[in-house]
Image (cartoon, rainbow, N blue to C red; front, top):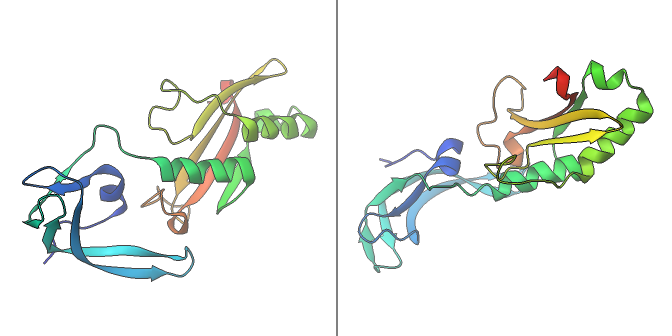
Length: 176
């Protein structure tokens, strides 16, 4: 009945194109479910019939893995959580950072919120999920891990805020 299940992995890892011309401007019949918590429609499944708007004809879908997946939604959600405290998540501070005192912890968390030194080298996937900085002679790391809502496994789709509990961990580099 379906040509490909649309799980979070497929949404983030592969993209449908027209098997004839390679265009991404394809449409297909699908079922969608309203997600009340997130406030948007979520694609549940799609069916065999597909149409290419470039060829202006019926087509078959071919699934490809883009050279560099678009992670803008994950980046935006990570930034909103890290910088503004928006979204579902938790912040953990390791014992090493806590031992430096509450004032240091407050300054370190402020540095995490303001961090903007992302590059291809330290953020190859463009998700803004890791950072390193120095504060008062201490090298610190922070990272964001996307968990499922039960905090038992990786999120099935980190680009979907309704399915993801972000965990930001602040640590001394020596604790990594």
